[in-house]
Amino acid sequence: MRRSRSVQPLVLVFFCALLSTAGLSQSSAYKPGAPLLMWKVSSKTNSAYVLGSVHLGDKSMYPLPAVVENAFNAASVLIVEVNMLKVDPRQMQQLMAATAIYSEGDDLFKHITPETREKLAAFLVAYGMPPEVIARFRPWAVGVTVSLLPLMKSGLDPKTGLDMYFLQKADSKRIEQLEDPAWQLKLLASEVPENDSDKFLSSCIKDAESAKEKGSRIAALWSEGSAEKLDEYLSRESPDQKTLSRRLREDRNPHMTDQFEKCLQSSESCFMVVGAAHVVGREGIVNQLKTRGYRVEQALIDGPAISERVAK
Image (cartoon, rainbow, N blue to C red; front, side):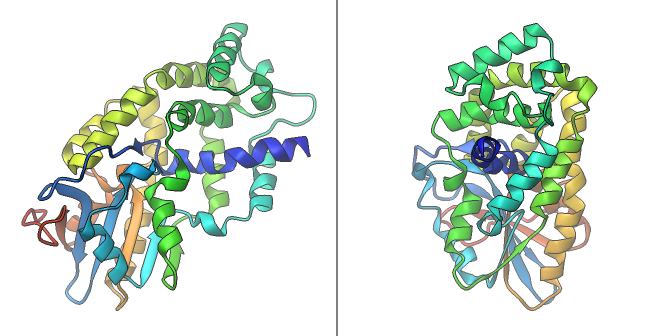
């Protein structure tokens, strides 16, 4: 039972790592006429919307601009990365136990140096988490927790992120998920070899010190609707970080694009919400759709439904 209680609060946190670590607190009103990280994509016979999401938010983000709500309300299908409303907690706890927790007789501290253990303990205590809570967790799980704690401690919450907001409003809409939750957890688990445990956690602790600053910058760029600036900012990573980011972001984009394209080839109206990092950039979903020949138009806040900034 002890293991189950410690696993359950972290399940949603781990999915946020795959969705995005970006959080948003929208303290000022949305500015009419400004671009949004939302695009209308049109084929010869249909059109659909894709919204670049932030997955940690607070209530000050809402209400969203009318153009977003109108696009969502008109859709019959909501597409998300994972339908968190349908995740079976017991199944996820079992999977977490298999992929994220050491077996009896082993623990995290046997795989990291005393120096890293000291830094980790100090960091966790500073954010109100006793080190013993994560002692049995593998490095990837602890690293995810370390990365997201500063943002969540500042008041950002997955429950008020854009994905959860639209899931809870879906009502009679059909909900399609792009990825299986079990597959996502296994992907995270496969990215950190045991022999890199110490290096990985040291890097996570160091990066977490600037997490609030990075989160604020990403939130500002999201609010500006600047796809180019957001892509450039996300690209400022060390070689090690870029390798992990490619696996967690770019490598997943083609499948997401394929699923969105199926909507365009159908007669259904779709609204897709995925992490903003998946939408922007040369290998992002929007550019992939443009390359495939679809018309791509960026939305404006509280202005005309669609801007004249058609992707060329």
